[in-house]
Amino acid sequence: MTIAIQVKNLRKQYGEHEAVKGISFEVKKGELLAFLGANGAGKSTTIEILCTLLKKTSGTVNINGFTLDAKNDNADIRKSIGVVFQQSLLDERLTVYENIMHRGKTYGLTKTELTANYQFVSTYLHLEDIEKKKYGTLSGGQKRRADIARALIHKPQILFLDEPTTGLDPQTRQFVWQAIKKLQQETNMTIFLTTHYMEEAAVAHHVIVLKKGQIVAQGTPDALKTTYAYDQMTLVFQNEKDGEKWLLENELTYTEKQGIYTIKVDSTLHALTLLKKAEPLLVSFEVIKGTMDDVFIHIMEDGGAA
Amino acid sequence: MNAFLSLVNRNNKVFRRDKTQVFFSLLSVIIVVALYAIFLQKMQIDRLEQIAMATPEMVTMVNEWLVAGLLSMIAVTSTLAAFGIAVKDIETKATADFLTAPVSRSTIQFSYVANAFLIGLVFSFTALIGCEIFIVATGGNLLGFAEFAKVFAILLLSVSLASVFNLFLVLFVRTQNSFSTLGTLVGTVLGFLCGVYVPVGVLPGFAQNLVMYFPISHTTVLLREAFMQNSFATVFDSVPAADVEAYKLNYGVVYDINGHLLSSSMSIIIILVTIVVLSVLSIMIFKKKNK
Image (cartoon, rainbow over all chains, first blue to last red):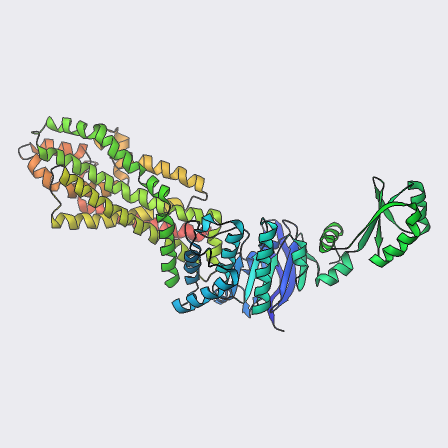
């Protein structure tokens, strides 16, 4: 598999403050990468550098075989990437069709190419019902469809999405997400995604977690879950003293909050064997599966193993 | 080139569809017309009657004086309004979206200038047609071919100057809020600095100098001269030359800088030099901003 994006020791300095502190990673062609991090972790800075919008301080970036900031290469990089920004940036008073065509022309495509590409994105994102409407009159989800269509109009090989589903209602989020997934599967496009929604990161091929400008964890969602997430069980005892005694006897470390005891379990089956033993003492229990949310929270809390 | 034209076309559409923007760009012109209808016209005619015979031509001449001021103002307010898109694009980060395509910042910036120039031309020539209808309707004559060609050339010059002048101002503006403040400021000050709200002669000495050194007011002078040329001959037929000169100085048809009467070619040179200087400064500031 070829490499679509290669980043080596990338740094970005704003005066005294270093926003990106020498990160390195690779994205394979056709891969869906989820780039996670709390606000201010350096996600947007990184994405802006990769999209040629911001000058890096040092490091090397290679996108689709072109070297960032090398002579004439930035134009080639721009031709091969599409970007969906967090905000909706098309012109409110122009129709969706006008917006997409005007911006499409800035890629130097011929009229025939542009029309063909428009057909392509229109079928993917179902633009028929909104293409004649003014962008400003659209709902949040419709705007997002238009934004993605605009980013795809020149058929880029890499699509950057900066929190594309933030602020959308669950149903629209689902729709947008389906469209992205379908696109990735059918066109083998490389997708670089930043998101706050862990369930979106869970379906990525590769996840990178950024904290204070550094990569603190990376790997497949499964690998990250194995390392950072664990199943938990909460117990409520009839008598707290007996409960604590039982926990000590079984050498279980626990945390307690308002009479609710939380313990780590290896698996749901492990929970079952414990429950069988503890059954006479219990009022209620709950077994909680480890999720990507836990991965994120745990990495953010302990700083992860970089 | 394709990308550039597409950007200009887009800027143009965005401007045209914003009807309130279009209206506000004409606001200061509407104010002039109102002021004129209420008292400016009457005041001027009363003054003129003291030195010359009251004739229908006199009214025409005063109307032509107004039309000249109005046309020079419209070039500035319309081009400035067109630059509103540039400010909005920066504030909303639409510029970033354009920059993900293989176009340079300077291409984008130049597309705003080209659009402002086009909008300025359309507004100026539409206003010219309106003004000619007004002059004919109030008993005056249409411009002759030679005068028309002259006015046409001055308007081109005036719109070029206004585009560069506003480009320069807008380079210092980052938000739409400050842009609307700038719009109000320019709209108000312009009427005084071109001697349209109040004739130059009425102003105190230092203000008169301010007007005469304000490059845009030279387009007003050139337009007045072009529009009023024919009327002078008839209205001031038997009026002493000294009175005529006093009128011309008082109403800013000709400027007197340090005792020298300024010729039209001198005004043209002032305008051209200003265009060059402001262009160079704008390019320098633009480059520095985007380093």
